[in-house]
Image 1 (cartoon, one colour):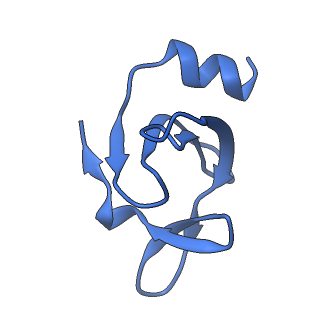
Image 2: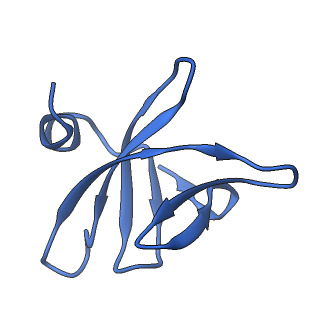
Length: 77
C-alpha cells in the first residue's frame, strides 16, 4: 500500500496539535519503525508522510519539516 492509501484507509491512532495538526494513522514495526501520518489535517492543505521514528537517549521523536515532534506530546485517540 502507498502512504496515501494507509492515511485514507486506516483510523486515526493519535493527534498532535502543532504544525497545523498531525494525525497518526498507522505505525509500522520492524528493524526500523515508521509512522504514517497526515500533516495539515486541520488547515485544509493535507499532505501524507511516512516518517522514521528516532529513538534518542532521552526521548522518542519524529522529524517533520525540520522540527522534532516528540511522541510523548501526541494524544492517543
